Length: 179
Image (cartoon, rainbow, N blue to C red; front, side, top):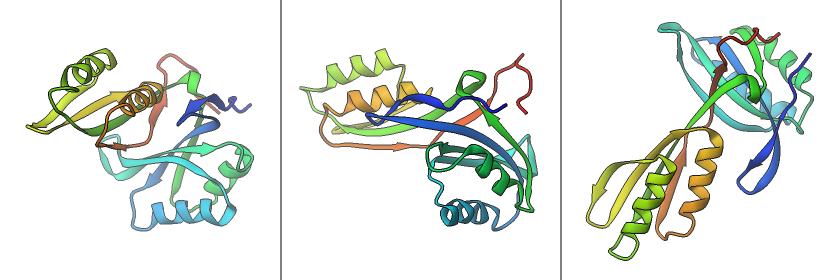
């Protein structure tokens, strides 16, 4: 039985997502084949994160957040499973997963907005990671919802540049392994 898709809001619009954790052989072209599969089938990738896995250079873990409305989950998993370098696929329901994302933002600062910005960052749990006389770069490593909220709050400031990594996720501890 597949987990229900995430029903929430990001970027001010309702979305339906599934989180796929895909263990792949760390070989040239694997990510291109995965992206090509999604493009050919018209599946929409909401976010994608990849890095070496479990301390081995032999495997990488790819976290793909898929738009559940672009194709049935079973079709997506079936197509991924046909790729030679795919070792394992886990469908994670958001309620059964620990999800995190990194947000970096550079904000232009002056004497008028510095105090409100510092208050906002403290309330959000964000940290200042770089400073110069006219700007700060901040970081928030948190849930996708926390990153969404900080991003919305920063819209009131001018001169904001934001970059987000996309989600990474693992099953919650103590949960039965997803099928």
